[in-house]
Length: 152
Image (cartoon, rainbow, N blue to C red; front, side):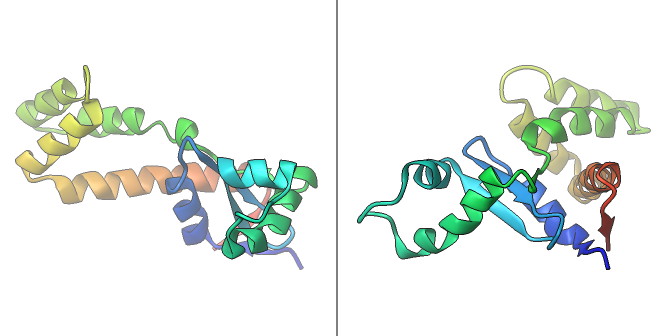
C-alpha cells in the first residue's frame, strides 16, 4: 500500500526552507529529512568530538537523504516566490486605493517588510495570510501530484 504524505507536515517543511537548509522527502515512508549546511558537511566529512549528540543521531538519515537517490528535494523558498504571491494578492484587491498601496509597497528595497506593514495598516492581515496559505498549499499539492504521491 502506498504511503500517504501529510499535507500539513509537507507545507511546514516548505515554509521552513532557508538558504542554509534543504528538506528531502522519503517517498517510501513519507518522512521528511531537514538538512542544514552544517549537517551536510558533517555527513560528507564525518563527525568529530565536537559534534552534538542530537546531530550525531540525525546524521544517518541525512546521509541516506543525500546519497541514496531515493529522497526527493522539496520545493525551496525559490520555488515559493513570496513576491509573486504578494503581487497576485495585491492585484486581486477590488478597492483601487488598497490595490495601489499594496502594489507600491512591493517595489523597491525592503519590499516584503513594506508589504507586511501596509497589510497591517490597511487591516487586511487576515485576508493576506489566508491567501498566502492557500497559495503555498497549491504549490505543495501540485508538487505532490507531479511526483504521483498521495496526500491527506
